[in-house]
Length: 118
Image (cartoon, rainbow, N blue to C red; front, side, top):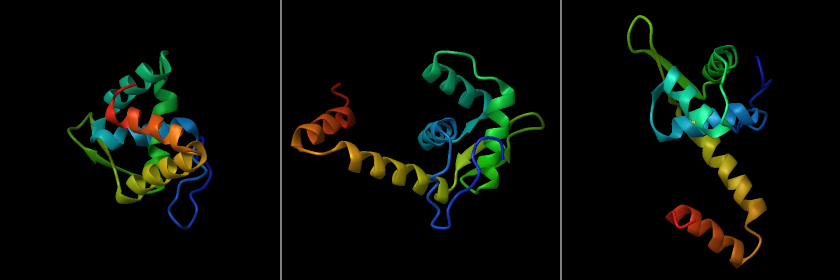
């Protein structure tokens, strides 16, 4: 595996790199082909994402059954979250929120983010 080593037995992808977690979050929106994922990552990181980094990590996520890979045509693959990948994203958010939301003020801040008011 290129950046992450393991996924624990419960299906929670705790050992994923931030890069791999960001790929999962991007795919939570909708299935995408590789270049669309690359563009989303480049928008987030504000720098070029090398193919040599993206595709091995996508392959790792497929191997971990967090992402499903299908062929759109002879040259283009589409990537989609599996149920296990969906659960990994939700579990990550739940863990992050459990650490961040420590009082009602912070809960309100999260509600504002969810409502798009920030």
